[in-house]
Amino acid sequence: MALVLTSASMAALAADYSTKHPAVVPFVQEMQVEYGFAPGYVSGLLANAERKESILEAISRPAERVRPWHEYRAIFITDKRISGGVEFMKTYAEALARAEKEYGVEAEVITAIIGVETSYGGNKGSHRVIDALTTLGFDYPPRAEFFRRQLKAFLVLTREQQMDPLTLTGSYAGAMGFPQFIPSSYQAFAVDFDGDGTVDIWNNPVDAIGSVANYFKEHNWMLGADVAIPASVKGDNFAKGMTLEQGLEARRTVGELQNLGWQPKRDLVSEREVMAYEFDAGAQKEYWIGLDNLYVITRYNRSVMYAMVVHQLSELVKEAAENG
Image (cartoon, rainbow, N blue to C red; front, side, top):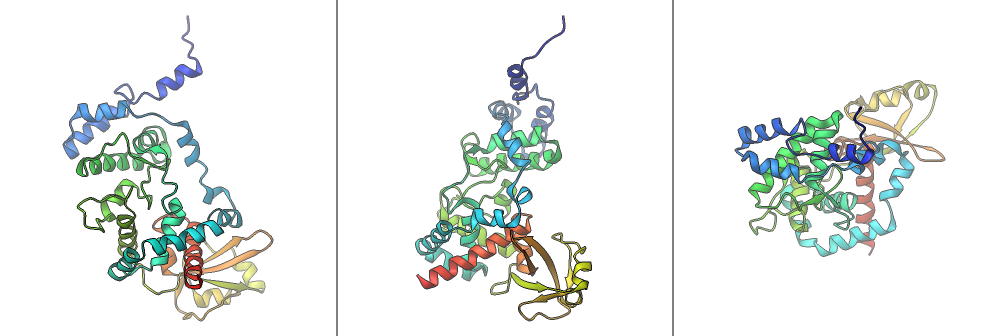
C-alpha cells in the first residue's frame, strides 16, 4: 500500500529541525568546529525552532520590489511618522547630539533610520529570531547560505551577551531591535553607547542610536553632504538615454547625464560620478540624481526606494522639529 501523507503530516515533517532534517547535522558540526558549541546544545535549540510559512511568503514579496515608488513612499512618509520623529529627537536629544559629534552622522538621519525600520521602536518584529533564521537558512534555497551564516552569528552573539536565543524576537528576516540589525551587523557595528556594559539594541534606544551612527560612519557617511538632488528632463536625447542602467552600482558623470537631457536642480561638477533614477510617482515621473550619501543608505538596505524614503523622512523630521 502506498504511503499517503496528509497536508498536516507533511507540514509536521517540514517543521522538524531536529537531526532528521538533512541540513541540521552538518550545521551542528560546523558550530562545534568553528565556534566550540556543544553539539547537544545546538541540536536542542534547532529542535525548538519552528518552520514558518509566513516567513517564506513574506521574503518573497518585499514592498520595495512589488510596489511603485508613490505607494512605497506613502507607507513611510506620513504625518504620524514625522511627528514621531520629532518626539524621538526631543526625547533622545542628548544621545543624538553626542552620536552626531562622535560619529559624524546627522541626528535626523539616525532618527529616520529608526523611524523607517521600526516606527521608533513601536514595531520591532514579533517573529522569534531563531524561527526566522532557521526557516530561511534551511528551507529557503535562494539565500540559504546567507541565512545560515546569520544563524551562526546569532548563536555566537547570544552566547557572548548571555541572552536566551529562544526568546529574542525580530523581523521575518531575523533583523533585530530598534535599528533592525541582522546578527552580522550587530557583531560588526552595535555599540554600548550608554556605557552600561551591555550592547542592547532591543530595549535600549541609546545603544540603538550609537549603533546606527557607527554603521553609517563605517560605511563612509559624509556629514553635511547632499544625499539626492531632483532633476528635470527633456529632449530626444533623454528618451534615448533612459536605457541607461539604474542599478545601485551604476554611475554616469553629471556631464553625461546633461548630454542626455538631465538637468540637476542644483549645481554639480560636470565630472562628478552620480547615480540617476526615474521613479513612478503616480500621475507623473520623478527624476533624481543620487550622490555618495544615498549609496551609503543603500548599504543598510539594498533598495534605492528605501534610501530615498529615509532621506526624505529625515528632511521632513528636521523641518518639523525646527518649526515646532
